[in-house]
Length: 79
Image 1 (cartoon, rainbow, N blue to C red):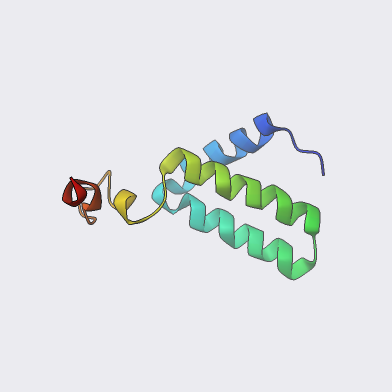
Image 2 (cartoon, rainbow, N blue to C red):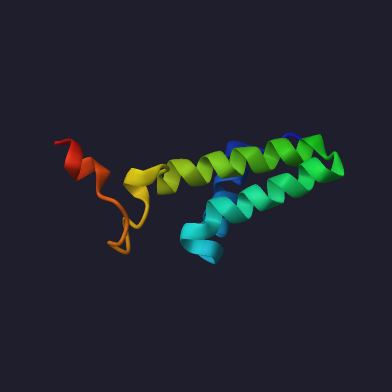
């Protein structure tokens, strides 16, 4: 399954371009398909893609709605 870090980053960017804020969910759906098929190499690849998407877009409540301005503003409440 050797997939380079560059390929993972390209796939993550493609998912973000195509799915926007829903990219991690779409990639996680693909990951689940790989698990259902018993494709462990595919599972590992998509897990890396999900991780790369989270690194790019951020994760957790502090990031929800960041671009739309409609999510909770936890970071500002903590200061």
